[in-house]
Length: 179
Length: 166
Image (cartoon, rainbow over all chains, first blue to last red; front, top):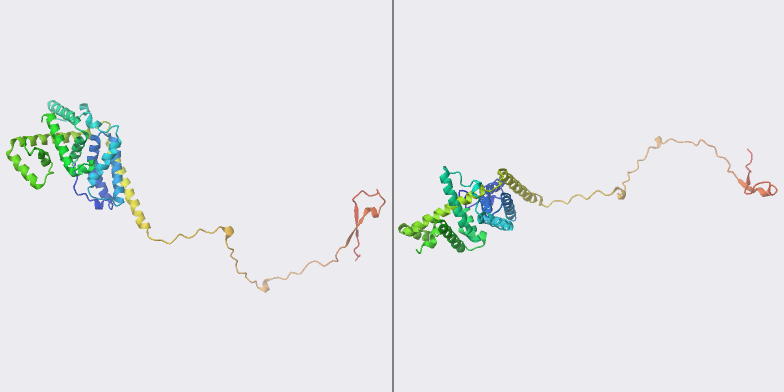
C-alpha cells in the first residue's frame, strides 16, 4: 500500500533491551507517523514534537511492563490523540487544498503532464474536502499501511465500521473525481 | 448494483477472509461492472496515496535538519531512559547501611592515653633555691591615735613593722 510500510511483527521484546532496536523502530515508524500528522494539519515542527512525545510515551509504556502487542496502532493512537490537542491546525491540511504553487507534482516530464497532474490533484483535494472527518482519518491511516483492525484501534471504531467507512470514502472520491 | 460491490475495496485491501476473497476473485473474473469498479477504486486509492505521500514534501518551511535533530533527540532520550532503567536493577540489591556520620568533636568521648610511667632516674631532683623566712606581722595604727587632730589628712594610717631584727 505504502512504500513506507512497516513490518507486522516488530521486534518489541528486544526493544527495551537493545537501544539499537529502539532506534530501528523509530526509523521504521517515524515517517508514516509524520505523514499522518502532516495530513491531519500539523506543521512540521508540531508533527516532530508529537512523534517524539509518542516514542517517549512508548518507551515509558514498555518500561512499565505495558503490552507489546499492536505497537504500531498504539503509536498511531497516541499520536492521533496528541494531534487532537492541536485543534487550531487540525484538519487544515486536507480540509484546505494544497497550494499547487508549492511545487507539488510539478516534477513531471512535460508542462502538459504537469498541468494534468495538477488538475487531477486539485479535483482529488476538492473531493477529500467533502469527506467526513472519520472517513478522512480512515483513509489516512489506510495510506499509512495500517490494517482495518489497527485503524479501529486508533480511532476507537469496530473493524466492520472501519471497512464500511473506507468503502464509503473511496466510492465518494471515485464519484467526485469521475474516475 | 452488484451484490459484491460492498466487498471490492476490502478485497483490494486484502481484508477479507480467504473464503470471501476467493468468492470475490471468482466473481470479478466474469463481472465487467465489478472489474471496472475495482480499477476505479485502485486508481483513486493510488491517487490518494500519492497525494498523501506528497503532502509532507509540500509542507512549507520544512527544515531538513529537523528530522535529524528529532531522531537524535529521541534516540538520546530513549538511550538515557534505558540506562536509567537499568540502574535500579544494579542497586536494588540489599546493601549494608552506610556508616553513621562522624560524631561532633565536642561530644566525642575523650580517649585517654595510658600514662607512661617515666623512669625515676630521668626525673631530676630540683632543690629549692630560697631560704625560709619568718612570717611578717603587720599592725595598722590609726593616724588619729598618734598625731593631734588635723595634723594628718583623714584616712591616713600607718603600718608598723614589728618584725624582730635579725
